[in-house]
Each structure stands twice: as C-alpha cells, then as structure tokens.
Amino acid sequence: MSALDETPPVAPAATRKSRWSLTLTIGLILVGIHVAVALLTLFWTPYDPSATAGGRLEPPSLSHWVGTDRLGRDFFTLIMIGSRIALVVGIGAVAIGAAIGVTIGLLSAFATRFLDDALAATLDILIAFPVLLLAMLVVAASDGASLWSAILALGIAMSAIVARLTRILAKRVLQNDYIIASRTSGTSWPGVVVRHVLPNIWPTLTVNFALQFGIAVIAEASLSYLGLGAPPPNASWGRLLQEAQGTVYTAPIGAIAPGIALVTLVIGVNMLADGLRDIGDPTRRVSR
Image 1: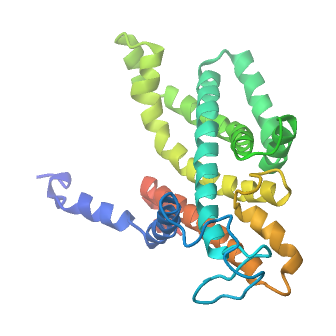
Image 2: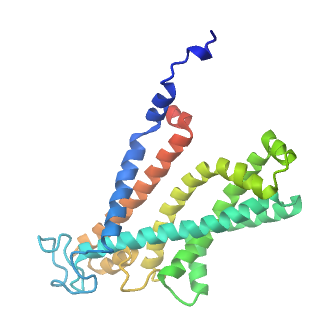
C-alpha cells in the first residue's frame, strides 16, 4: 500500500475547516450588519429621513440615539439611510467595473500582439490616475452630480484595474496544455472562455471585487463630501461629514457617527476579502 493510500479520508474536511478564519468571520459579521440595516430601511426607519423630529443638534437620548443634526433630523435614521446608499454605490460600481473590465481584459488576452500591447499601455496609464480623480472627471463631464452619475463614474474608473488583472490571469490560463487539448477537440474560443478561462480566474477576481467595493465606498463618500456625489435629500455618509464639519466642536457626534459607520463597512469588506483570499490560497494564511 502506498503512502497516498494511507492518507486519512477526513483530511479534506479538516483542511476546509482550517481555512475558515477569524478574519472571514468578523468580516461577514460587520458586512452583514450593514446589509441588514440597509434592507431594514426599505421597510422601516425610526423617523422620516426628511422630517425635523427634534431640536437642532440635540445630544444622544432615548428619543434620538445619536442625536439630531443641524436641521433637527434624527441622525440615527440618516446613518441607516447612508448604509443603503453605500451598499448601492459599492455594488453598482463593482458591477459596472466588472462588466467593462472583464470584457476588455478578455479581449486583450485574445488580441494580437500589437493590440494587446496598446491596450496594456492604455490600462497602465489609466491605473496611474487615482480612482477618485478619474471619478471626479467623469462626474464633471456628466450632466451634474447624482447618485447614478457617481456610481457610473466609479465603475468606469475601477474598470481599468479589473481589466489589467483579468488580462494577466487569462493569459496565464491560456498557456496551459488543456487549452490546446480543448481547442484540438473542437471547442470554440467562446467555449474555452466559458469552460476554462472564467472558472479559473473567477476566484481571484472575486477577491479583487471585494477590495474594489471598499474603494468605491470611500470614493463615493469623498465625492459627496466635495459636493459631487448623491445630492440631498440622500443621506450619504460623506455628505453628513461635510455638513457636520461646521459643528464638530459643539456636536462632535455628527462627525463621529458617520465616520464610524464608514470605517466599519470598509474594514468589514477588507476583512471579508482577506478571508476569501485565505480560502483561495491557504498557504498564504499559514505563512503569515
């Protein structure tokens, strides 16, 4: 009997169990809280987001858990609405960036050498610009600041990073012998993409999408802070921070609360991405 035959049959299950890290658990909890709050706002909020439910800049109390803003609106309600906006922006921007980036990356991987070099150089130039700067240029070129223009701008800005990663991963897969065997057996190039390329590059892309989600949330908050994001009455965290800067000394909770919400969501998404990376490459977690 060989050494391979003596391997305990329970090893794969134990390996899978060891890959489930504390990082992934914390990330799921933090992101899950924000998702639950965002879904809850579709049916219920403590107060009407646009109603002046109390006095101006009231401190936290039983009636208003996080106090009120300078207009008398319940701040906890606005923070809840901000979770929904952040998730919509993150998911929308990642979806647009993935659709554009994966398409361009695959086309570049299958393109001729000259076209591939041209696309690669263009992507490198776009990646050299910060995502926020590219998003600001797209928003400025559009009809005006809005939630959907911010989502479109961030998606387009992030597509270059996704395209470059897709190109590298797809080229690596196309060099394998089973691709040649698949083509020899009569599989078309679209069939090769669906059966071999996408299944092999998708795990790595998924981790990158999670990281891009966090970048999109921070970028949208920055755009809203600069007045280029979702306009009122949308309660974006960035806009709440911008409105609270004038009262940060008299009512610091107005700046602290949206900042904590933003940080916890981004940390949760990054930890979730890190946990997914550990599952995809368990040797990385062992080496740390």
